[in-house]
Structures are given as structure tokens and as C-alpha cells.
Length: 300
Image 1 (cartoon, rainbow, N blue to C red):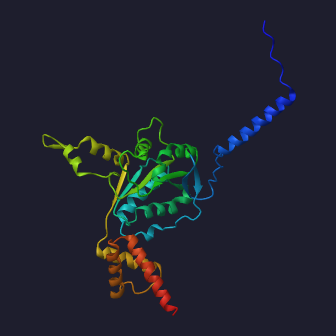
Image 2 (cartoon, rainbow, N blue to C red):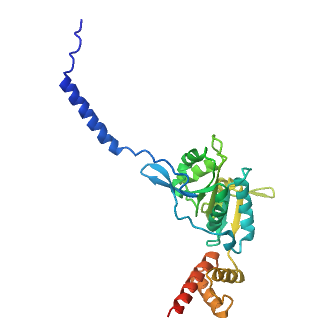
């Protein structure tokens, strides 16, 4: 018959407990801190930030204020996206939106302007970087019970082959077993219609079936992501007259006279030529520069 184990002396037990507590304290330093409670009233816009392995929602305190009336030359695009946003805010069915086309034509500015217009009615925005798209399910989980309506905003979105965010976005848009949250939509901007680069050799995969042309698997895969957005909105470069009209609008905004003068128009066209683009962004940049030079000259 075995003897029962001898009792550990009290002093030795106290020492063991103290060592265990010291070890646990050291281990806690390596563990991620518990996320702070989200202050949902701190802002109308938030940014998803990855800190170590844990993502957090951070309020954006200086939100870019843009008025819809300031966006010129994109009336049709404004009408389409605003109608969809109004449907979303009113709680009726609405679509995820992909805004594509020329740079500087107002894609991201339109989303910011709609946020400013509908924030009082509960619209909110969460900016998500492309590298953090794999966290979309976590973000949706955080907001699904909130009363506000959230746009998950991905700016300048494009993918290379085998990027993890590509498949993550496909799953969230349409393909997950879990139902999509009713209080969030994805609005993305991109210079690419299909969000991925297209190569010449992919044309060799196309097949002729009777009078029809069928794309190959590679092309089908690249199109499949953009097709998951219910609303596609295309933006185009401005012609010279439209560009000069937008310059005049911004000069009026900055309270600078002479927007129709030959001097201003010549300078605006030279500015666009140096930038290699006639866009709303270039027009705004020129107007800021011209307004600054004009006011500085007055002080001399």
C-alpha cells in the first residue's frame, strides 16, 4: 500500500504561488491589451487600424467636409450614388457600389459629400485599407447591432494575383454562409473596372462557340469580383470646356474675380498640361494656387 504524498510546507507553497504570480505578470506583458470601448458618438467617420494583431475602430476627428454642390461635371454619377445612399439610409434595399474611372474626377469626394449630407440621418463611414480587408467580418460583427447605417469605404482599390484581401472581399460581398448585415454597405473606388490587372495572354483563353465569344477562366475570375457590386458608376476625364467651367466654380468659391479672363484660362490650361490631366482635382488645385497668389499680391 502506497503512502500518501507528504504535505508541502506552508513556506514552500507561498514561494511557489509568488513565483507563479510573477510568471503570469510577465506573460501578461506579451498579451494584447483588451480593446478600449468604442465611442460611437465621437465622429461620423471611423478608420479601422491594425495594432499588432488586433484591429480597432478609431474615430476621425477632422472629417473632410465637402458639399455635393461643389462637385461639378458629374451630375449623372451624383444622382445614381445619392439615390442608392438615400435608399440605404431609409432602410430599404440598396446595393454595394463600385466607382471606377479617371483619377481626380470626384469618386472619393462624392462618397465624402454624401456622408456629410446624410450624417444627421444616421449615416456613418468606416475607412478600411486594402491590406485590412481580411478583417471585414470582424468589422461587420462590431456594427451589426448598431442603429446607424455604415458605409465600409475602400479607396483606390486594386489587387494583384493571390492577394488575401481579394478573396476576403468576395466573400463579404456575396458568398459567405453568414447573411450580410442590413446596416452596412461597401463603397469602393478604383481606377480599374475589374480591380485586377489584365494581360494580353489572357485573350488567348477566349473561345468561339458558334457566333458567341466566351471568356476563359482567368478573365471570368477577374470579372467575378466587380460583378458582386450591384451598382457600377463610371467617371470620365473632362474636356477642355468642362475643365475651365470647374475652374471658374472653384475660383468663385475662393472669392477670386476674373475666372473668365483669358489670363486665367491660359494659366489653368498650362496647369493642366503640366499635370497631364484635366480633372476636378486639378481644377481645384489650380484655383487654390491662383487664389493664394492673388491674395498675396494684394498684400504687397
